[in-house]
Amino acid sequence: MAELVRDLRDRFDVAPGELDQVEGRLDVIYRLRKNYGDTVSDMLSYLEHCRRELDEMRFSSDTLARLEKKLSSSLKTAREKGKLLSTSRQEEARALEERIQRELRQLDMPKVQFKVDFA
Image (cartoon, rainbow, N blue to C red):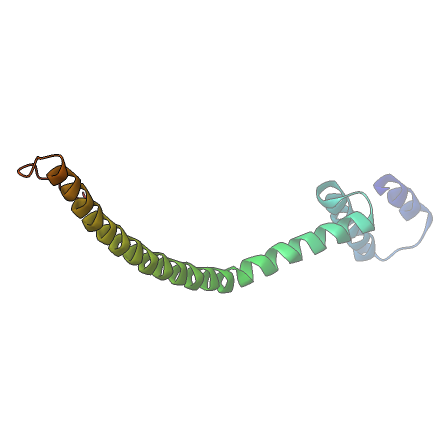
């Protein structure tokens, strides 16, 4: 294409800076095609892809804040449920101790002690 422009330059009367400007624009177009696709459609698709990525980056701080809030809420819920579970286990452990102690007394082993400990 650049050769064609140079050939045409010899045939037509063109202002000196105008040809350089056209060659510069052609160079830009060739570089764009090389980097972003052979067709205008390919280049526009790449542009749209870049815009979506930029939007994701812009809104990522909002998303991060929302996720951090959700994580905090989930951790709070998990701690609360963990405390309830721990309390329930301790109550069941005491009940188990009492049942086993009764069984041991029935087996004529009153001095044997059974204890459930939590680590």
